Length: 86
Image 1 (cartoon, one colour):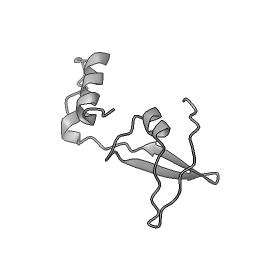
Image 2 (image 1 turned 60 degrees about the horizontal axis):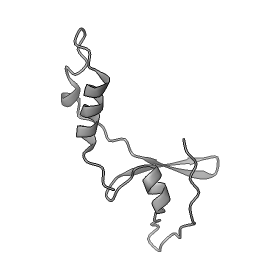
Image 3 (image 1 turned 60 degrees about the vertical axis):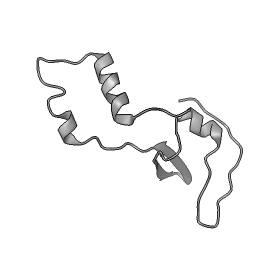
Image 4 (image 1 turned 180 degrees about the vertical axis):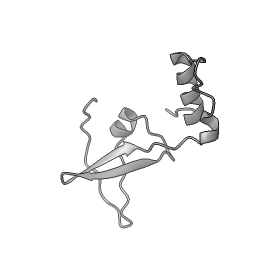
C-alpha cells in the first residue's frame, strides 16, 4: 500500500478528527463513508469499513458450473458500493 504523509489533525471537544484530504483520496473515502478503527502497537489504524452484503444478494451468485467473470464480479461490487464521489 502507498504511504501518504499528511499534516496533523486536531481532536475536537467531541473527540472528532478530520481526516486530511490526502488520506481520504488515497483510501477513496467520501463524505458519509464509514471507517473502522484498530489500536495496534500504540497506534490508531483507520480503514474503510467493510459493509456486510445481505446474504440474499449473494445467493446463487457463485453457483457451481456458472462461474462469473472478473468483470461481472467487479460490476457487482461497484453496484453494491454505489458511485464514488471525487
